[in-house]
Length: 430
Image (cartoon, rainbow, N blue to C red):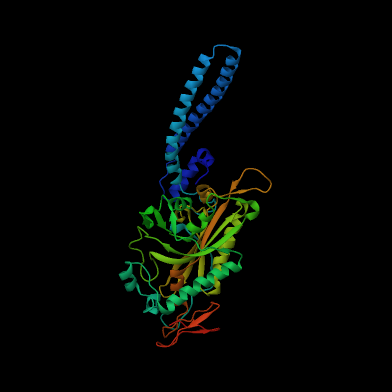
């Protein structure tokens, strides 16, 4: 949610930001309603002061034996007018809230203008793997353990079913990533995978992304589209001490997205699915520290890719490619040698105080003064489907086996018919 003072003082910035993010912006209507609201409030405050004065006058006249009927009537009329003003203000508030909840966050000043074509590559690590054979895409390498047909029978198209070594690799990756985050000083959270309407509104998925989410209508609960929803809302309505900051959390969640409007995009294999596994990072910071925290969260995510030996690049998103809630965002893209293209595996976002205002997450300054809103940050650390795809494609062998480096514990998949074995130094996934 945008600060109301900013809405009043710089509506042009709000309009430009909404236009850049391709969002409808009702700032003009909001300003009209805000002007009316302030006029009503000013009149009501004046009448309350008048009524207090009249009440005192009535009391004095009663004690002195004077005629207090006129003053009492004026007080009664003032009270009736106050009630009318308060009723009108109460009727205006829902529409004002509806309008402001539909306004996206303001991009940071250094965010490039434009859409996806204006995204700025800021760094690369490693280089594309080289092969003395033609590398295969992951759906060929994972034949028999990635089973979209079985998933389709169970749930429908664009769902995933992994079995055998692929299921084991995903489970291992989830634990490995969480352990890395714990060593970096984060607290693990295992949150609900369903969220109420207030929670999804607080992190900014509602109202804009309602069509992209799965809703359980009977209970009015949403399947979470990202772990950011559950973990951030752990502190919805909370007032922290400044000494509590930063709060650094991580957690595994499945994520569910309809991805309405994505039809026609590349949906083969693990590239685009309705349910996917992810380890999420969520940090709450002091406003003065959020920029440094953003860079630190990025380094945490890229460190995982480096340990896995995956060629990646970091992209600073342009305003038109930013999410609704983000003020600044880095995308991490890994190279897919079997598909010869980049695959997004993480978005690391600084939302500034936008989500904190929607969810009323504040802290008390150590030196005293009014509570202030924290800054919230989130990032995938990492999302599994495309990570799995790039991982098996990068470490494939000519015979179709996959030798995955970087994991602290490794599982050998031997010839069919024999049981898997643990080995300390070498891992072959067939």
